[in-house]
Image 1 (cartoon, one colour):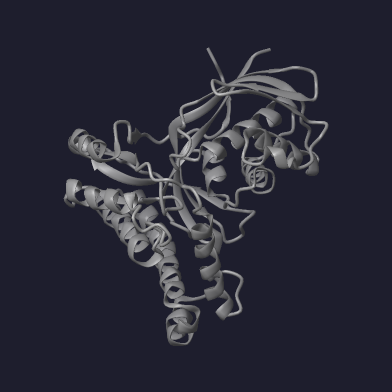
Image 2 (cartoon, rainbow, N blue to C red):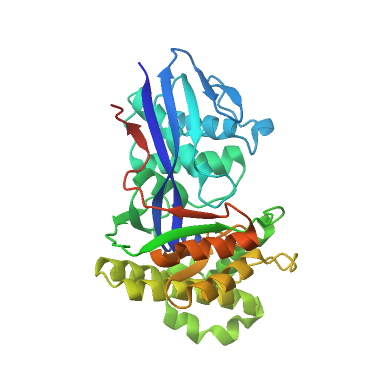
Length: 372
């Protein structure tokens, strides 16, 4: 029997580099999805076919394969391994995979793929895995089998769908709260700057390490366990850690509070306040978090340029901020509908045709689709 599944990509609206400090994020699933046409095959082999490639994964071997690092096979094997470790059934299936989520665009194509595979295993083989567990399985696959360190935000919002405030005080037990929002008059736009992501892992890792160093100054495991009062009282003593460490910690405290403020503004229909806070988040990442370009390659500053252009084009009528990890990749903007054409035209003139993706929020998370 043929069955149909999908899982959405995501955008980060606020909470830049807060999740790894047990903080809060505001994120949304988007209308760009990965889909699969699936049939169980009665074997222990998963066969996937897409426009890019065809491959098979033998589920009788769930060991980490170093030749699969960075490949889709690792994600399938890793999700299956998490299921097996936690007492859930898996099995073989044949699937035709198609994706609307562009790779390398910061829209979490890998997390969507992981959530898709988790839902296929759960639904086909009666595992009844929760949305949170499917997200955790995806993170496990990406961290351990694929070989990429990541938090749990991307998989969580792809699994749950909609616009949600996610609290990571307990990282493996995130509290997911849906947020009501009316963006009438504005469109979400993600702009791909085209800068290379190569060799940026040390830049990403440095943010986590420096925030951890700030937390360790207080003998705490994360900045979530440090109060703003004790932090500000200790800044003078903390300068031995380096001023950038202090700046990045300052970003965390402001950003974590901003997530709650933005969610409240949306719930109350205060769109102007929402836009102000989103831009405030963007300025904090630019000035304090300093994840707009790599100090090892200062000539590549596509994000800086994209943010400056957005500020000029929108002229106080929308909002802009870095999107995701930073250093290269994408920015996100909330563009007034009447400026969408002009915004796209001017950004495309700099970053190339097709750089702008205008998006809508998808309420449904990953799961099975009922086809008519």
